[in-house]
Image (cartoon, rainbow, N blue to C red; front, side, top):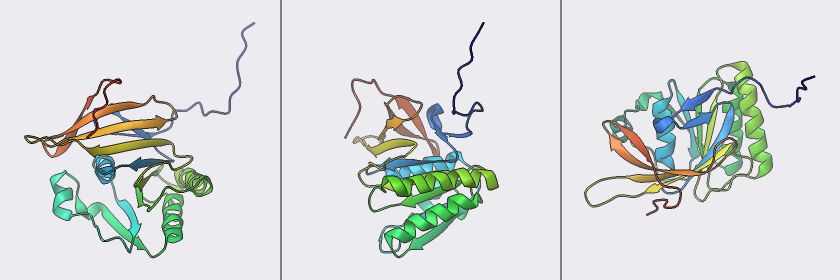
Length: 205
């Protein structure tokens, strides 16, 4: 007589956002990107998605996204709603509320350091709650050095420019359902193209 193993894992596949090269980010979850080119990774996600983007950043941070640069990547600057917080705890609270509302498909947070396990757990629960209220939101936290506990996946992106061409290296450092891997990222039209790198020779600048 055949036996069926019971599991707590959902049987229905989780909706995901598909990035260039067939990469995917699970929706209703929060992911992490770090490294010098982490903002470009977030813009790759924005370009692959539709609808408004909530971009939460520290008010004390001098750098801002450049509208013409967004347009040059094929991303409409008019889709972005920028929210500036005065304190690190305000950043996390704003991200949590934006995810829980389920009103926008993509919520990006620039954080000065990786959040701990408890704040990340709260963000994950908020993303799941947002999926029940509306379209499943995708959360993406940007940190300088990586290491957010409890992130659904962690990505590192850095420049790998050459004298004759621009380029970047993207590395999936960890994910719940995919192995680590690296890609070379190059401009293609108004977007970006990805080419897999050999596992034994990740291309780092």
